[in-house]
Amino acid sequence: MTTLPPTTAKIELRHVTHLYVTPRQAFMAVKGIDLRVEEGEFICLVGPSGCGKTTLLSLIAGLEKPTAGKIFIDGVEIKGPSRQVGYMLQQDYLFNWRTIEENVMLGLDIQHIRSKETEEYALHLLEEMELINFRHSYPHQLSGGMRQRVALVRTLTCQPDILLLDEPFSALDYQTKLKLEDLIIETLRRHKKTAILVTHDLNEAVAMGDRVFVLDRNPGRIRKEVMIPPHIREPLPFYARNEEGFTTLFNQVWKEMEASSHGTD
Amino acid sequence: MERTDVERIHQAYLREQRRQKWLVTTTQLALLILFLGAWEWAARAGTINVLLFSYPSKIWAMFVEKISDMSLFPHIGVTLAETVIAFLLSTLLGVLIAAVIWWSPFLSRVLDPYLVVLNSMPKVALGPLFIVGLGPGLLSIIATTCAVSVIITTIVIYTSFKEVNDNYIKVIKTLGGNRWQVFTMVILPATIPAMLSSLKVNVGLSWVGVIVGEFLVAQNGLGYLIIYGFQVFNFTLVMVSLLIVAIVATLMYQGVAYLERQLTSQFK
Picture 1 (cartoon, rainbow over the protein chains, first blue to last red):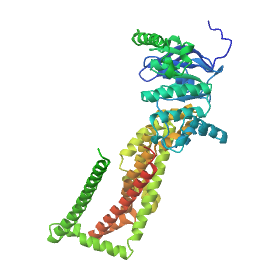
Picture 2 (picture 1 turned 45 degrees about the vertical axis):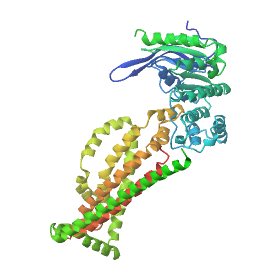
Picture 3 (picture 1 turned 90 degrees about the horizontal axis):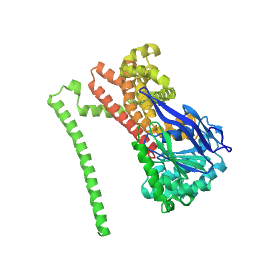
Picture 4 (picture 1 turned 180 degrees about the vertical axis):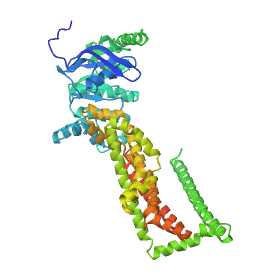
């Protein structure tokens, strides 16, 4: 059962359990999570609110230390935030007092790796996202979708191998969201990144992911893993939605979600 | 709808705006003139005690006289210098203390009751201690003023430090930032608007501190003029001093407000 697989996974969670302790109670957010993510994979986590999706991201990002269990990246146990992991939040959280360019360079400043080369790479990413003309603008001059694209560039500038996406589309309007989904998938594939997306939009999860995990709550556990077949996972999310079998998969995930939400606690 | 119609409606709107603004200004001026006129009239008719309230015309005459013989300027200079120094010092100290207690949650919990007590206490009551400790002069006036405003500055700025959205801190942390970087890259820049608006409060508090300090010890300054005028029962002098305090304090407040607008223009 617990023998090591022959190859090291990009991300591996072994029996991860995490508790949040408050004066009133100790609350088990996730319990006994085992998860392997291979290099270049796009994983989606869905589940009812309170199932510990965001907790898992925080743990993988090294923002919190799991109460029990271990997390490995490239076979090395993580001890804290690392340069290998980029994190994208629900909202862009751009710094209003910095220009777009300075916002994008934030990670370089923090890690003291700002040089001509890294700056050029950041500007190249801005160009890829069609934001280069706004490099001297301030965030409040940009639309929501543009701002979230800047946030993506900010995350990618430090060249992480792994991207953690915490509902990055939830604050956007539907049209912008669909476009950004495609853009993110394209960008991640081009740069060969591994990604974990947390979302409560099942449609989005099926359209974007290579594998979808449905979580249970109280405590958070993996309930079901759904594999997305190649003909749905290969096209961009916008087209994946029109592929045959998409609705069937969606319904399958939907049923799991329903069962998870109404399951006995 | 024709383009000219749109233009016409916009023009009408602007006209109405201008009219409103003119109406407000006129009413403000009328109110001031009415007040001064009533004062002058009441003083001449003997309905109010002129020894205490003087006459607007006499106050104005003394104001002009003191300005033209330059005898007021040293007093204004001294008081202004004290106010500005004390204001800058207490703001700086307030930010510094706030930063220290932000840095150490333990210290912030330890210091909490002390801050509450110090904040509730009327700090001008410490005046005598400063006079004995620092000597009757500039130093004790500045110390009194700092005592008046530093605690509230600390509390206001520390509160604004804590109110910074955690997700901004998360951004820094996920990029590998340490606590010092969280402070310099998020906490400090994000709270500049809050700090500037606490500066505006501090302007008023600094004037309170300086005037009271001058009441207690000074040989010159506007507070000294007020207390001197009171001792020789020259209430015209008291009124002139009050007028100048009002003017200078307003200018200083407007200066800080201008600074606030300039520095926070991109914080929308």
